[in-house]
Image (cartoon, rainbow, N blue to C red; front, side, top):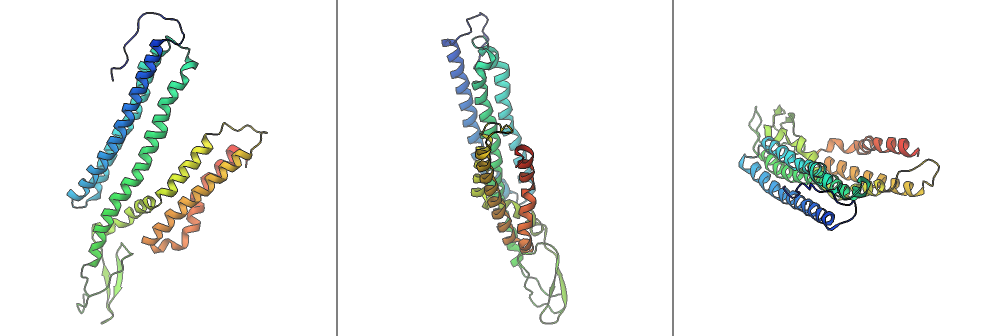
Amino acid sequence: MGFFSKKTTETPKEETPEFLALVAKWDSFLDKIKTRFFESLVNAEEALIDNLEESDYDINPTMTAWHGIKAQLMALSNKVDITFDEKVKPQMLQYKEEYDILDEDAKGTFLREKIIHKGIERFEIVLEGKVSTKYYNHAVSFLNEDFNCTQCSAKLEVRKDIFRPHYVSCDYCNTVNTFTPNDKISQIRWVVDNIAKYKAIAEWDEKLKAENELSELRSWSEGEDITPYKIALKKQEDASRAFWFKYFTERSEYLPEYQETIEHDIDVKMKWFYEMRKREYNY
C-alpha cells in the first residue's frame, strides 16, 4: 500500500510519536481493507445474480465465477499478514520489543479470521442461497409443462418433489410412463442444500456466536473449575443442534424422502462436537 517507509536511524525503544504514527497508519490500512472487503461483497452479489439471469440460469458458470471472486477476497486476508510481517512489524520493532506489539499483530488476526474468513463463510451461505432460490423457482416451472401419456396422450400429473427420472401411471389407460426431467430440473436436488442452509442463517449466526464465546475462554487446565466451560459447551451444543434441525427440516420440505432421517442426520453432524468435548475437556 506504500504507507510504511523504511526508517534508517536508531531511536529509543519506547513509545514515541513515531511509533504512534505507525500505529495510526496500521489502523488506517486495516480500515481500508475492511471497507474494500464489504464493498466487494455487495458488488459480488449483484454481479453473480446478473450472471445467473444472463446465462439463462446455467448455475455452473455462476458458481465458477463465485469461486474466482472468493479467491480474490481471501487474497485480502493474505495481504494483511504480508503487510504486517514485511512492513509494519520491522519498523515497530525499532521502538518496541516484539511482545509489546502483539496487540498490533492481533488487530490483523482479528480482521483476517473473524471478519474476512467468517464474513466469506456467511456470505457464501447467503449468496448460494439466493442464487439457488432463483434457480429453483426457474427450474421447477418446467415441472408444470404438459407431460402426456405415450399410449393415449392423456395429460399426466408429475410430482413436484421428485427431481429424477420416475414412473408416472396413466389413470385412463394404466400405461406406465417414464418422466425424464431436463437438466435444470435434475440439478434441483443439488441447490436444495443451499436453500436449506440459507433459510437456517439465523440459527447459523447463533451457532457461530456460541462457538466464539467458547473460544474466548482461556485454555482449560485439568483440575480447575470446569463450570464456565460446561455452560459454554452446552450453549454451543444447543445452538449447533438448533441449526442442524432447522437445516434438515427445511431440506425435507423440498425432499420429503428425508423427513424420516432428520434426527439421525443431526446426530451424525453432532458427532464431531461430542468427540471434541471429550478430547479437549474430558467431559
